[in-house]
Image (cartoon, rainbow, N blue to C red; front, side, top):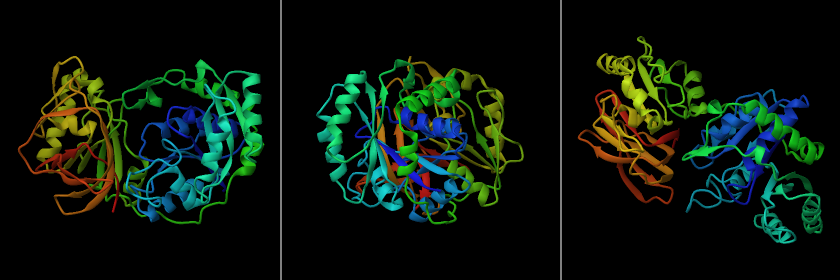
Length: 430
């Protein structure tokens, strides 16, 4: 079960489309492709899963313990012919101040697995200068091996030949070129790509990406470049399950649950039962825990505010002592109110003393280490949201947090009885 990593010099160069196209093209050839995504990303894995026809897993060397990374790698490889893992940001980008090992970068995962890197380079606006860029990535870290380059957004045959000739002297194979094609662009919004489940015509778009990859990329060379398989390992549960029967919100407003966390709960013996707040469904009446993951409640605030059955179900769960936990968008939904982009105030569940605003936007982004105030458990995860807190409190804080450099971030979130939440997306214990 060999693997390879698809990385880029920076974000925005067509890496996700190229990776999805590779997965879809190789899967169409009959290979069992195991897709993966480096870093804290809950959107891109859904595209890769659609392309490969198999669930995608997140791999993060900063936010996950080494045993969890190794176990997830081995689990992804089981029953597969090839693991294709998309990188995060630029190849060497990771947690600032964390050093090379444990930085969460794609390069760090490459060193850990021994897998080679396919570098996806945006060819826009450059010709022979591409050789200097590729040379820098080839030589920057001797522990990271480049299998080859795929150029994207290439202007035509002459442009492709210029890029090929420029890189030829370096001894780094050009595995292919993808022409500039507006039909390959995927729509985005403030937290990244529009989620796969919301995109009409996704299958056609992935089929088009696969066709372009098949036309422009040497798939046999890509397969031959893949590295060795990971050693078998069983991952420990990243986070203990909050209950035995867990109602999990799952729809367009709450779509940002990490698969490895839910899988870990199930491996630990818990049962997960989905429900849709947007469809005014209450959490399962027999659930002893309710989980509202992140998502886009700010885009559906009016509909959520009108869904009385959903709100009543949350209150009933809290009254019977079920643990109710909201993460990022789920935290916003557990609050008293949410102000949307137009400045309209919408009533939320009212289980936590919190009012948030999407009208007063500010980016909050970065890795977080945290200590839960309830029992001192140490966890790791990240923040990624634009919402701001208008009012928060009283009540006990959910966690005390630090950034990747170890700088204090103060106390985050709130806990009131069995109800708790914060803007943290939790990925693993420390």
